[in-house]
Length: 458
Image (cartoon, rainbow, N blue to C red; front, side, top):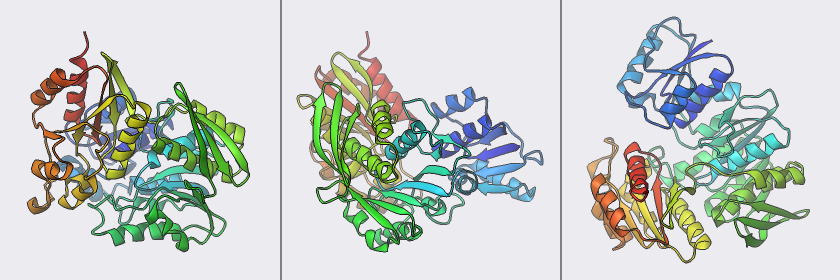
């Protein structure tokens, strides 16, 4: 089948394109005029043509990604597709029809879901379940982020955002039988006008569960626990002393951390190379689900020990002159705190410095800043990059550098120019420092970070 994907450079659509190519389809796509690494190189390596296909009757199916209406070319192509009556479907709906299975596992929440989904997919795969799966990040274990299979199991990252052709939260399309919710905090302020409407999306998700399903809830999340009363099925809790599953003891030995996990049926010992309390809680969530579904405890333990994590989730990129360089996806209060706390815990004698690019849409709104007031407490300084805004956000509601300074305090330094940032770090970074780059995207920020690292190489 000849399949054309609009908005092909998204984390979902790029992985979908590669999976479809591997399945034997002819896949082409279009996106904004310039597509940058790593997506551009990944698609090129897969021999998938981008922005060079004429929209005509030779296309058997068009898959419409969430970002299609962000670019003039893809908006124009969508009109051509409709005029030519070429069959089309949203990327979300395509997954529902071709990847989601009767035993549908969905992982949702405002933090942790990518790591948990990739870890659960890894455990199931290593346990011989051969699941279909999809998640947004790139695993370090070198397995695909999206895979179709013939088994009756699917594992999918459930995003509450509403974009493209979707008319409701993405996770509401995925028909969960087994569901993990790490939290139900109001993160996508571009999709929900208030906290109540955000919570209602999670409420609907929980209410979809069948009687023979399972809901796994994080006991540390007040917003998540409020969903328990809407569940029609069994509830499993994790992450507090009163939960079904909790970490009883943590013991670190060199680069390995041993977790002793309390379960309703005795203790499980888990060893991991991942660092930080938030990663331990992600592991705990995965163990809670997989153990409750009666997967082999030996397989669970062995799989977690071999799991290396997801790229851009507290990823150690380089080490130069005893300076550690980390890359992280963190943008929200909880994610920032978790990442910095993990570094502080693992490297207690090092100075933590942050290069912060507030790229996520919710971080551009003034009403989101109050949440960041104490996020950077573990950092000695925060350098804020140039602010770039979604033009749809009214100027009165947009954050300014002064707003960030007023919120975070004197440790924040605003350096809008690339040359300023590189020179500042070249002059100020010292041995025993950690520099962590926090951004959810943006090619310029990635280039700056790489230039900083390169300035310390001989």
